[in-house]
Each structure stands twice: as C-alpha cells, then as structure tokens.
Amino acid sequence: MRNLLLFKFLVLLCFSTSVFSQSPAYEYLGVIKLNDTSFISYRLAFEEVDGKIDGYSLSDIGGKHETKSNIKGTYNKDENVLIFQEYNIVYTKSPITEFDMCLINFEGKLRNLKKNKAFSGNFKGLYPDGKPCRDGLIIVSNARKVEERIAKFDTKVQKSKKISQEVKDKVSMRRTLDTLTMSVIKKNENLNVFTKTKNVIISIYDAGKVDDDRINLYVDGKLILENYSILREKKEIPITITKEFTTIKVTALNVGDSAPNTVKVEILDGTNLITTRTSLDTNESAVLTLVNQ
Image 1 (cartoon, one colour):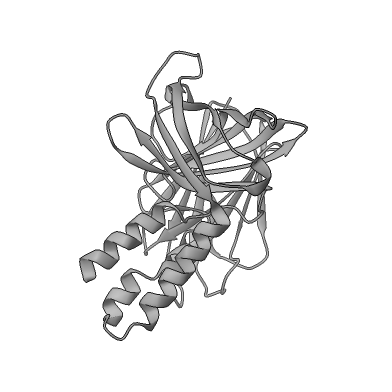
Image 2 (image 1 turned 90 degrees about the vertical axis):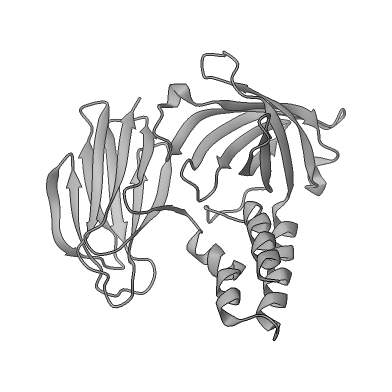
C-alpha cells in the first residue's frame, strides 16, 4: 500500500507544481518524454491574441535542472495547429550556459484551443543557433483539471484510516504544493538568472510568518547585509552589473522560530520579474548568479 501511494504521489507531482501566482488564459501540466525514455515534468502557459502565442514554459519543476523559458508561436484555429518555440531562457538551475540549452520547437494538432483540452505531439530540440539536439514527445493536460484530480486524491488519502500518519505526511499533495509554489533554492544550489539590463533590483522579504530568520547577504563576495532579520516589508537593493557574472549569496544564520530559514528573493531587471525562495538550515548558503547578456 505504501509503495503504491508513493508511486501515485510521484506521478501526480509531475503534473502538479505551479511556480507563478498569475494564471494565463491557457495553462497545461504534464511531461516531456525524451528519446532516451526519460520523463521530465513540464508546464506550458500562454496567451493567444489574433492567432499569436506568447507565454512561458517550465521544465523539471522543483528539480535540479528547473528551467523557465519564454515561448512564442501561432495558433491556426481553422486547421487546429499549434506552433511554438522556446527562446530567451529566464532562469535555470542547470550549470550549463544558455547557449548549451536544448530548446523545444513544437508543431502539432490542438483541437479547439478555447476548450483548453489535453494534447500531445512530437517536438524537435534545437540549440539557440538552430543546430539539432534532443527530440521527444510532449504530453500535457488542462492544468485546472489536473489540480482538481490532485485535490481529490489528497482528500482520499488524508481521510483513510488504513494509512499511517507517516505515509499521509509523505503523500500530502497539498502540503507539497504549498512548498513548491515557486522556485526553491536549497543548500549548495545555484539559480542562474539571465538579465537583459545593467540595472537590477534585488528584493528580499518574508511573505509568510515572520519568525526572526536572519541572514547575511553577499554580492560578489562583498557583505551587503549583515545579521539581517527578514521582515514582511521588502528590502530593496539596487545593483549595477559591470561584468558577465554577478553572484548573490544568501547565508542562513539561524532557523528562526520555525525551521528552515526561508527568504523570498525577487530579481527585477526591467524585463523579467523572477521570484524565488531559499530553504536553508543554519550556516547553509544558496546562490543566485546573474548572467548579463
């Protein structure tokens, strides 16, 4: 029973995690299947105006290679054909550079976009210079319907008297979704954020319960905030980027009244707003690297 529930939990998780607070007109959750048979969680969200598509994709949600990219394309309602391409990587946890990233280029049938139904189809993987990389298959469903199924599954598990509390805690989908509502940077992880401008504003704050989490904040090794207690009000730190790579390191000095030490970090570069959160124990650090393009 325990293994079965954990398996269902992992399957549903691939279709569940959201990292953005605003809901676009069309939103899908699912997986991409690579030709080597590996599966990667995938989120697709976009607006459609006069046949033109504009939005974003998110792959490996909550994983070590989580990556957000912008997408653009077209939808032909007469022929029910959806075309989109990933471009302009916004951020990635992957250590490779943007120019090494394999971008999805999709063209396939989507019956009646307005009904926001599930769809699938093959895609071509291309590097930014147009050279081919890894091809695969997209399989996605309507995000709202997926989340409704998740809620029903979670309710069934939590009400069951045959399942131990230990297992319930492990398969609590709602609790997992609460902790994965945005990109989370953990111990020794690095989030590469691609910036388009020289002037960037970093904001740090606690949007949850203020519990005296304290941090040191470094920019390129220079101590900017020392023993700073995270408040609900945003602390804005303007930065002028003068080189290709700028590192921002958050070091937890304690875990406050409730572990772990969590700090919301926003990066605003005039084009994109990236919101992330650290999750650290005492003396652990997480890093954001601003990659100026």
